[in-house]
Length: 291
Image (cartoon, rainbow, N blue to C red):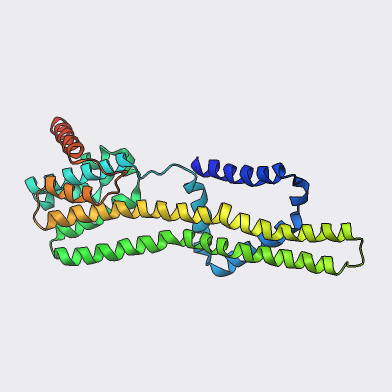
């Protein structure tokens, strides 16, 4: 919602300021200039990306228009699930987790958190590393190295749409100049026209520069920025899971392990120590009743 409001603010501020200054919006209505700039940008985007990258970039736009799903509630769900899983492993042994890992949808622990269960990427990340922990054949150092590699892969893959739109944004001012130059060439080719008509042609040509800069810094570059912020929120989930599991592997009790994970969260999503303690107490009580 903020993105749409922001776009409206940019549009009305620029056009409104132009009108208040005595300009006429009709002078900015240059569809051919927009065709040159937009067509060149889209073509360059197609040249610079593979089919998979283009598909990911197009899918990222509708997703970013929705509110972020990586809020405090989701992080508390992640912490709660890991606390229950690690508590079960501590009480009944790591082998007791096999049924939860193999069938998360049928697990009493995972199914108690449907919002988290619907996020297949996070569930897969948790269960994959729990499976490695159950096998007992890898050290904490080896699992940490593997986690780092996977998280880095997630970050690189998630950054593709942001990089694509940033590249397009960087190129739009130049394409605006191209459109303006073509307009000036047209104007100079009609130098025998009366001064008022020649001036009108040059004014139309300058619209290209205006559109290129406005589209770049008012619309496309901010989109790349919000995509990167969303990617950072996404990566933070994996980092939280990583820290909690590694703390458990190094011998810390579940209550302490989840505190390690809490410390990795951004301040806007991080519960206080007391809030987490109260939440874990509620999780324990709910788990006891369920049993």
